[in-house]
Length: 533
Image 1 (cartoon, rainbow, N blue to C red):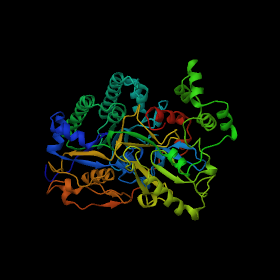
Image 2: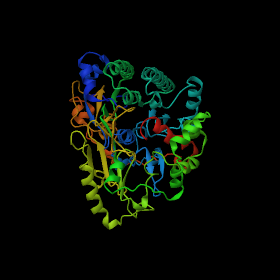
Image 3: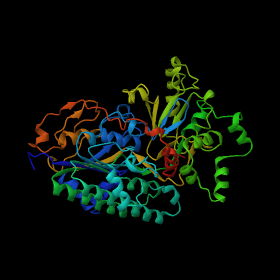
Image 4: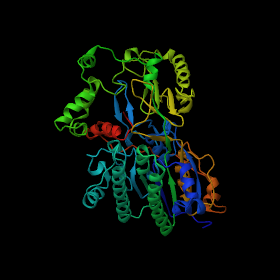
């Protein structure tokens, strides 16, 4: 369709889809709809963020910005008292696509809770409490009402760890969840005529954490191929451009790497001793496992406690009862550095943290030793380094409050912040984890059939969509327009890339979402999804 501009854009997110097996199954003829995108459009790997994780990659896809620009580094935000609260849409510092291309239909995108008041429709995704209702979960209010009426059993997520040992049952439950998600997409498209559709299916990611079996994966990917086919049909009928993207890839793992245990062994991390209430509980044999086991014997589950107790009560209990949360088991007065979350390593300096031990003038020296130690962490069987280690100042130069060091597990190693008994632990429940190479597929007006993106990253998606739609790229975007994908002579190929400054999307005025009680269950949900131990 040379010389035309797409009438709209459809960004279909498939969380966790890896490039290598996808191409292999396309070559085998198993995915006919994805194959159409390979032959009639553009196809190539899409490099994720560093580290390759959901909470930072999806905001990068939506905004075209790196974490130091869009402002989100993890699922949970670390405060100066070493406490954690969820990142929310209020923390995002850059405008997402749905603030620029309107009206928009936005569904199930991680890190969008609470729902923003946009021109169009929004249903929030991962990090939405199951207890959320009304306009914090869906906007406008009529959409929330329609969901309650037509999809009364709709769920935001599925705690796959609960299905360990019951994998067949899990595959069935996941299929039901995804079917409900498809019903939501249909509902949203029935209600409006959006110029932008941005909708994410997290099913591939959830499946692959628990099940890494070729036969099962192929069967499930053939099912997801049907979702791609529906999107192709919608876009062809409406003259839209389709973009199918994943936030990261996936692969089998050999070890969980408990980094805070390693930092303890190297003298950077200090474990809380026998002093204080937590030490008293420890000496008395009181632990999180013993408390939860006792409660479960009388029918009170951990999930129930998370649902009914305020965050302040849960936080108080977590800081006093010995368990598996490394920051609560840390003695900050003896700690020089620690890992928070999925890859953020901090020097415990006196300016950033209330109980810091490192003078700001000494941070560079501590960081040098820290980087050397992390790069020296080796697989106990092969002797090979297991971490990719980055200076946070170099990697995230746009934010002075970025982590001091950023780490990511190399192939077949998963980073965890656990203070376990050993640095290396073989996988039991989570058998596969994230890899850097996701997928980028595109088809429609202006896209050259058979083209391939060059060194594309997640930050390149939004600028490319915007330019294709005739919109200016935000001046704060870090990604580039993938101009090599455009058909010669088409409008996007001929038109110069424009930039402009958009107002920051700041969410609702008034109370910030992080202070709302319905976030009390989110940490428990992350545990159920395997992102916190």
